[in-house]
Image (cartoon, rainbow, N blue to C red; front, side):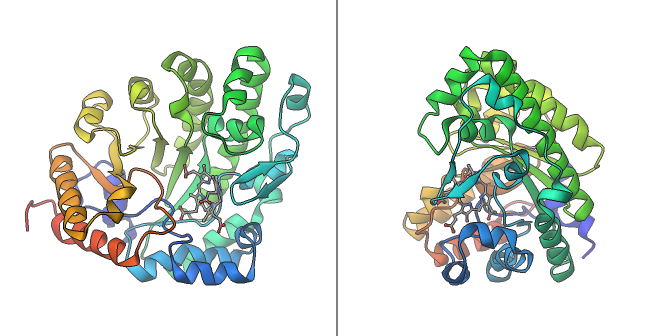
Length: 346
Ligand code: CP3
């Protein structure tokens, strides 16, 4: 198959593909026995920094389930070490010296990906060679989501310190978001040059912000990203987790694809976003733990709703949970592939 005609890339361009494509956020990970086997030998950071192993983890879910897109095995935190940040995983990201004052921001610099993360581009080149028929998604964290970890110092339920930094150090906060946007833009450009076919921006903590703060702090950084990456010619996917309350602002950014979490309604999102962007999502990851009949009923209901809501890429509404059963994922992929045709019911 010609890669450009793949259902995933067609949907990204806003066309109606012959059948609905599916991939799953966090599709490479600990619910896969073959991933756990890789992880027995090396820690997570080593895995992301060893191109052959990162490529192997990227391809595992493609081989097992025949997903319509691969996503590079890496992490949103990967480009930050090149900015002068010390990073560990336990299992989530830990920043040994969090950014707490304006002076801390002045010490940081925009990272050059070819210098600091060449292993990412090497992994992309390996995947392109090994599975040339499957589109590959390169990705990065959104500036605000990376800001959350850098200021808070680790994962958190509500990132109160990060939100407070926006209020108490407005200029330093904008400056940090700008450094992050430039670092992320360079990383995504390098991933595009290495052979990725689509680029995704994960804004996992966007939903913590009210619309005013989102517009004030996130829009400038995201529009910088968007205008730099437009030149790559690749489709851009933006996933504002928990961001249903500011989708009107997201609409102004003009991304090719908008990811939705499971609480959003596809048809309501369509009404706010207008006809252009493809929608990606948004089955509740918990549905994979429901009885098989209920899982399939929900997947079909989502496909039915999507049929009237323009171009659609099937996905979960957030990452797959680590104790998800393989057979449930198989049933889901099978359902989307057989039922999700442009022609309707089968
Ligand atoms: O398959 C894929 O989706 C590609 C690889 C990928 C990982 N992280 C691998 C990973 C992607 C796209 C990410 C994105 C990521 N990383 C996000 C955005 C998506 C989201 O979930 O909202 C965020 C917020 C992170 C930061 C991060 N990295 C956290 C919070 C954790 C720990 C959570 C967990 O699952 O335990 C990580 C570590 C991480 N990143 C793992 C994997 C497979 C687990 C590592 C391991 O112990 O093997």
